[in-house]
Image 1 (cartoon, rainbow, N blue to C red):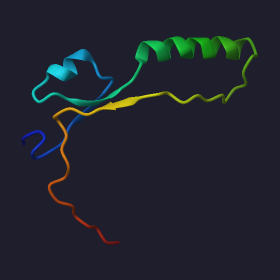
Image 2 (image 1 turned 120 degrees about the horizontal axis):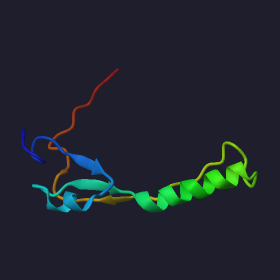
Image 3 (image 1 turned 180 degrees about the vertical axis):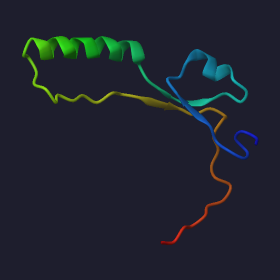
Image 4 (image 1 turned 135 degrees about the vertical axis):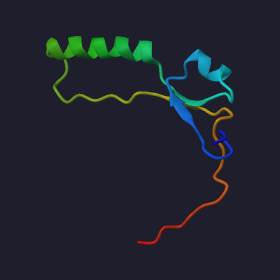
Length: 80
């Protein structure tokens, strides 16, 4: 199969090597180090009682579109 002619491929974490793949890999960028630091802060706040169990935060990501994805060549309708 050929990428992206036959199949689109996307990754996660936007490692530097993704831009140099053949073809360059579309990926979701994720600030892993910053999010790891934030997770530690949340854990400490939880242990110290500053936040309650079940606390949630949204993690910001970004879509980095490169050449490993393409629009579908055709669509197939499935009827139930």
